Length: 355
Image (tube, rainbow, N blue to C red; front, side, top):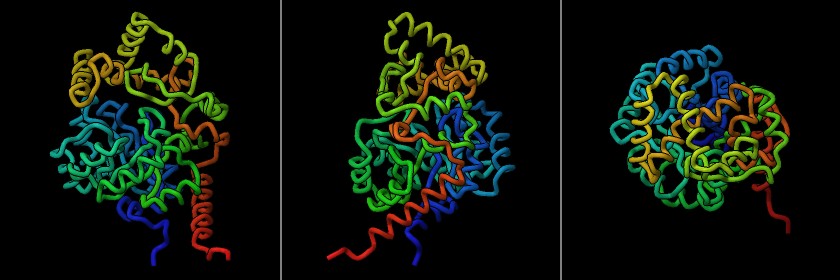
């Protein structure tokens, strides 16, 4: 009989333990992905903030650091998305993750190439839509998650989705330890996905000055804001967020223009291409063109924190769980502790009840 930690997630993605390291922009770089995979998890490389020509070399960099399978995250609204998909198929990555993105044709193309499609959703209706499009499994993120997030807690959303679809489901939003993994398995999920917990590791390439803002944060320092692009996002309070929260339309316009210029430099995309990407994003969702433009260029504000080491000038996306974390283990230590604790909790649950 297989062990409870040997789930469909492990067998489909080829990892030792049912734990996914999510693709945080500017954070899930080759070093972190490889360290996560070497520790037994399944890591996703963040390609949504890369130029198309950077994706292939980044995949090769991961492969130089680990022999384990891994995935790549992208979205269909980034400049050069079709070229990115061509690269993922050519390099035969194990899986792709995305939010709003590929249509049924693209999902079929990826699956025909042997690539598992593992989108992240935050609502029951989105889970049902993705299941109907033919994806392999779902990551279901409750409201405790970082970055763009919904309002329904994991303990409510997870069973709703499990009842609504018939494909494997992975729990995300508020998970950081073995107790959470055991709880997710008890609900019927095939494992957990974590972002913030992996960001807060020694293997994460984010500058130490930025990590320090995470280890110092309490739950009172974390809030949800819609001021970035009109869609709720969970952040750690800092100087830039305080400025945005108080900003008028002119200040936000100047900020968006500055970010658009930096985004042009990073991606190599022209202003018309960025605008076209924002229009596609607006048509695909319930956002205005202005909000979608801010969404398209917001990665620049995260880059300042996660790459440039200027957390006071950027944004600090986080899961609510950061408020109870204060350490920076290695990925090896993190996964070993999660597995040990999950096994202990599952064993305790299986013990005979006292009279």
